Length: 382
Image 1 (cartoon, rainbow, N blue to C red):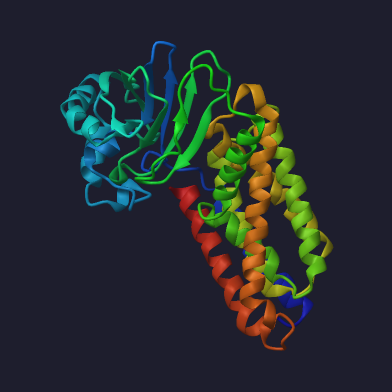
Image 2 (cartoon, rainbow, N blue to C red; image 1 turned 180 degrees about the vertical axis):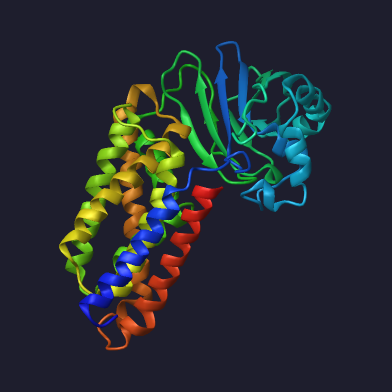
């Protein structure tokens, strides 16, 4: 611990000013950030179906795979930038030469048999500001075998992750899933006579919420670990986790219902900043201060907006909107508890040892703070 109240205040002021200065820099380009594709399927009564895929056509054409989160990191960055500058007609011509390869790599099956997909077009926005990402929409269609009972889907591994939303025409319910690169979806039951039960929806969205924390939410994992590391006693952890849970539950609901809204370009850097803050404060204090609970609550409001962004992408069934929302939030809580339990299993035996703070809390908090600062800069500066 840094000795002397004056030293702590000085360091805290320097860090705070540095972080505020970093956040004051205007948001930079998001054009190079690679996002998951969003695949929406609607099955009609006559077994025909339509698929829309929201994606970055430039990323696919440039051959930039999921090993990169930023196109600038790829050796094909120049190709991507050139494609990004093409007007819609020219990019459409480029994409349509790529369509046969694209269709061949998609994996859609009915009862284990491969489906035949037909490309019907692509909607490409105008070039506009090159510093803003351009998402195009690809349109596909096909027909399932008359007696088919279930469909499975897998986005090509080399194209990265995708959000899948599938529904039978005429039903409000939909199956939603966030699939990693090459991951095969759970079977989707066909036919208007199939309606997911409330229990199935609860199970589906609880898993989605859990997976958003473990293993997909590294930023949220580090924030929870930062809360865990503050003190070896459990009561400070309970106060912080309770404040965080109440806060993110509030903004998750308010954001999903459209009552509050902040752009991701604001929310995501502030989430990263919250991670840096808890790591830095852990380095200066070894006990819970009153302001810490208040700040954790405020940070929880931001994290709730981040959760809502993911849930908006995945979608909610209209007939069980509130059920799915609560189930997703429960899944998030299970994910956070699993992080805390894992931390207890790893270091819980040493939490009351005299060397615990020096050899566990300090290095881990320093790493969390460094990662939070790095993400803050990355998300602000692009």
